[in-house]
Image (tube, rainbow, N blue to C red; front, side):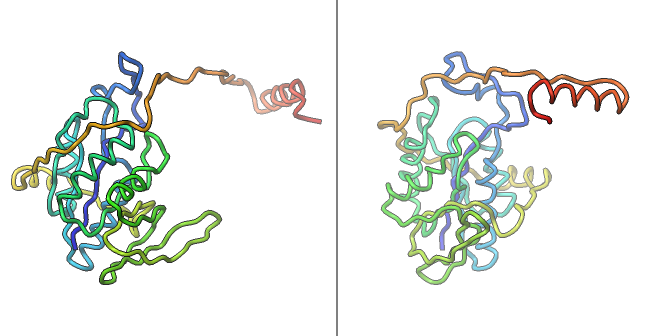
Length: 254
C-alpha cells in the first residue's frame, strides 16, 4: 500500500500578515509558512495506517518557501519518502492549478491512496481533494475522521453536522480529505528533524503548473476596522452603572 500526502505551505495566522506589492496575495517572502493544520491531520492518519499495516508514506509539497523544512519534519515523524514538486509556483496557486500539479505528480508515483487535508486556512473551501480526484478519475470522500484499509477498499468514517457520522466503503485507489486524524498529530523534536536532514534525501519531481486557473484574485486587502473598543474604568459599581447607561442608550435594556 502506497499512501501519498500532499503538504501545503500555509501562513501562520498568529503572525501579522502583509500584502504583496501587487495586492494579489499575502507577501509569502515575509510570512512564516508551515504545514497546513489539516494536512498535519492527514499526515498523522497516513502514519497511523503505516503503523498498523506497514503502508509506505510519501509526502510532496511545492518547491520554494519552507518546503525543505516541511519535508524533513514529515520524514522525522515517520514518512518514508519526500518530494519537492518543481514548477512555476511563483504566482498564487488557486486550487485548480494546485490540483493539476498534484495529479501530474501522483499519476507517476503509483499511489493506492491519497490523503489530503480537508481544506486550508487560505480558502476554507475544501476543493483540492475534490478536484484532484476528478483529475485522477478516482473516487473521493471528504470530512473524514478515520480510515481503515481492507484489501482493495478503505473503510472511512465521515463526519456530518449535529454530531452525526457515516461509515462508508470506498474503492481504491481513492482520494480522501481528512478532517481529523484518529489521534493528535505526533510531535517531531528538533533533534529528529536535524537527524533527518543529515541522513535523509529529498527528491525533486518536475510537474505541470500551467493551464487555466479556475479563479483569478483581483485584489487582496486588509479589512477596515468598523468599530473601536471602549475600555470602562472605575469601581465595580461605577462600571456597572456605565454599562447599564450604554445598554439603555442603544435600546438593549428595559
